[in-house]
Structure formats: C-alpha cells, structure tokens
Length: 432
Image (tube, rainbow, N blue to C red; front, side, top):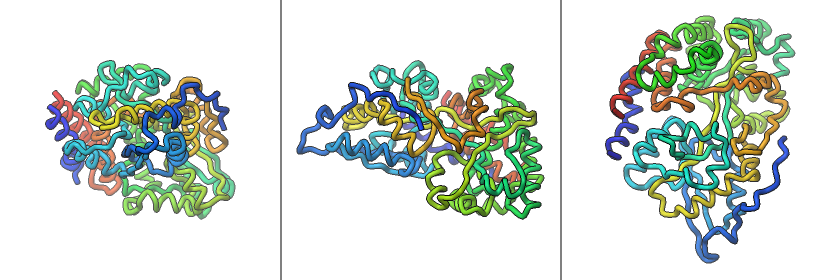
C-alpha cells in the first residue's frame, strides 16, 4: 500500500509532463513554554533533528535561532529544497526510509497522510491550540497530520515612487489592471516583471481572477468537493475567468521573453526599480529591502472583472508535519509544542509576514499591505489546491506548466485547464 501510494506521488511530475506537454502585541508567554531544562535530553547528549522545507531558511531565521536558544541539546538542521523539486526529493527519501524528522508540507499532506508517512498529531495538546481554519487543510478523516505555520498570501507588489512618477494608482478592476500596464509603459516605466521560468506565478495570478469571479459566488461553494470526486471540471467552470485573465498575455503585459526569467532575476529587476510591479508574497520583503532599502513598497490584491475589494491567493500556508518513522518523536513533539506559543509565532511572522492560526495571537501586517486591508477584512484570500483539493500540488503544477505553453503560444487556455482535469482524474483513479 505504502509503496504504491508513494510511487503515485513520485509519478506526479511525470503526469504533469505527459498532460502539460513538456507590529503585533504578543500575548504573555505560555506557562508551558518548553525550556532547555524540560527538553528531555541529557546535558552531554545532542539529538540531531532534520527539518526539510521548501521555504528558504531566511524566511525562518528568527524562529530557527529561537529553537537553538531554547533547545541547546537539540540540533535542528534546516534542509532547503526548492518547491520545483521538493516532492521528488522528499518522496525518494521516504521511500528509502531516510526521510527528515520534520517536514514542511502543503498540498501534498493528504497524499502523504494516506500513504502512512505522517504522524497523527490529533491527540497532542499543542494541536488543540490552533484554530480549526488553520488545521482543516491538514486534516484527513478527522485526524490532524500537521500544525499550521502563519498564513500565506500573494498579491501584486508595486513601487509607490514609480506609480507616483507615472501618475497612476492601484487598479480596482481587471481592465484597469491592463490599462495600468499601458500607462506605465507610456511613462517610460516597465510595468510588470514575472519570473515565468517558474510555473507558479501565472498559475497563482490566474486563480486570483478565478477567486474574484467564481469562488466569490456562493452558488459555487460545493465546487471543490465535486472536483475532488470528478463530478466537476476546471475546463468548464473556470474557462471564462482564465480566458479573461489571459488578456495579460494577449495585451502584452506578460511576454514570452519572461519565460527565460527566474524568480530571483524578476525579484532583482523589481527591487532595483527596473519594473513597477511584481507578483509575490511577504517572504520576499526582506530580500527586496536588502537590495533596495529605500524602496517605497506596497501590495495590492488581484482585481476582479467587476470593481470590488479584490482577492489574494493564499490561506493557511505551509505546516509542520512529523515523519511517522522519526527516531526522535519526543524531541520533535517538544519543538512543535514550543512552536505553538506566541513567542515562536511572532518569530515566524517577523521573517515572513502573515496572520497566525494560534488562538489569541494577533498581527499587524504594516503599511506595505494597506491596499489589501479591504480584501483581508472581507476574507478574500483563497487557494483551492491547498484548502480543498486532494491532489492539489500535482494538479496546479500541471496547470501552471501548461500556462507556460499558453504564454509561448503553443496551447490554449482550454487545453491548459483540460490538462489539469486529466491529472485530477489520473490521481483520483490511482488513489481509487
């Protein structure tokens, strides 16, 4: 059972190739915050714990330093693997019985849990400290397999000074978003830069418009459940909205040349003032500010066809799961126990802004995200592949890679959505 399930997860990238064609006030520290004295290790012993993650170490730096301070006899080795290759590396290690002790998980949680590779954390006291909204994406058949880190969200970063120079403001509709590109270009400013060498940014930006027009409609509330069962298709339900989004391609806002740009190259162009807009999330802020401490940074949500507060792509972000075969379950649980404290949550948020799902912790996201306030207040933050889809990561990877082909001019929007449907069908039948 496990080998078959793991082979399925490993095959996800092959499937995509076949079908795609190629300033808060922290609460008082908890009385049960773990300390070196109660860490359960002998003074002369050091326990080695390996944490594998797809978010860069810089986005966890303060938290990791805090772990070192609190647990001097537990050495946490942080192993970063880029998201493009994360599942392949992780699944290969799990199959060989050499997986990390702690795993950063997202949309693959359900697959790994069903395969028996994750520890059930339902009965742990620290799990009960999180809001249900944060636990839901990591719950399978009533059992919780991961504890949420801070929420994640992605919108459009913009350079306020360049906007002022061009006499423009953040858009309220998608047509205004298209016009904004033309107005910036007319002022001699490169509008939007995108590292389209990665399949993620177009995938997320297109789903931002789907959020505005499809998921905002209460009549579509049951869509994701039907999609999981194969009773609904993206190629039918999403087609009008992804077609509307694709105007960024037909109008030249995103160009085929961007397929040659990496995430880091696009970040550098935006941070150094060579482009006015760039899509990403709070994890990039520290790097942007390091490259350009004087940048006037803002973010606005992805606008809809009709005027409104807009939507961000996101929701419960990644989470920490435990390898069911870890040799150090007590030490790992003490790390998760400490993570479920306001002190640890504020440390996580310091390097990667987002709201906390730990009950009682509040976060002030600051001026950068002021243009997103209305969207946040409306709850307009959603990512179906992490929140609801059983085989979320393989599906959106296939869809994103097909959108790269749309940008290259070798596929249509309809074909890209159909590719995602085929992957969903194949994954569902294999799980059958």
